[in-house]
Amino acid sequence: MSFFWYLTCPAPLEYIEKFADALEPYMLSVGWFESENPDVWIVEATVKQQPNLLFLQSIVTDVARTLGVETPPLNCEKLANADWLEQTWKNFPPLEIARFYIYGSHTKGEIPPGLIGMEINAATAFGSGEHETTTACLQTLCDFHDKDLKFTNPLDMGCGSGVLAMSIAKLWQIPVLAVDNDPESVKVTAQNALTNHCNQLIHSVCNEGFAGNVIQKDGPFDLIVANILAGPLCDMALEMVANTTKGGRIVLSGLLTRQIDEVVTAYEAAGATLDSVKKVADWAALSLIK
Image (cartoon, rainbow, N blue to C red):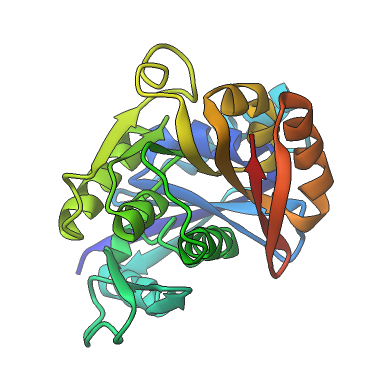
């Protein structure tokens, strides 16, 4: 029997990506999820070979020291391959969100009538639609479609597994530019688009935000979706609005309801106006108009 090692590390929400990025080169997969404390999230990672915990803990310690925060503990658990897959499947049941039916490759059964199916491999469950931020984004996009809003040149900034890019492609049958700074996310987005028969509409690109000419040559965009985190969203406000057509829509998520005012202030200062707020539990998606 083969085994996986499963690692977790609590970290402040505002720095969660920095801890995840530091561990990522040594892991098979890395993601993060919320804890009971909204200010502290959990980095989770898997690896096939037994990890050197002393070495990995030293990496975590260096990141914490650089950021000036308390060093979080790194925990490790050994899981049998079969147990890991079973746990993944239990954590990723089929989801009905607005007009979409999102399911893992392990799921059996027919897509319910009237819903748009999207298959996401259970091995890439992070970013597969199970989080409230993705739910809020999908609901917002379906609201746009129900209002008969038309788009021709959309951008998914920080595409992850490509769920939002594919939802746009399937709702409006239009090409979508999907961008992420993680090469693995770009690869997963392309594979998911192929699995879901919309690969001809999805162009996935690895790029650091709006930097360089990769985004500019295809912009400006009449729809931008960005499901990231409040801090990076605020940092990108000027570029996000600058790359949106006049009258275009911007959908932002990855923020807690208590962070709405902070994000709205940044985007209003950049030239956008808040149109609607979609709340799911403690999370929100904002719709803005340039």
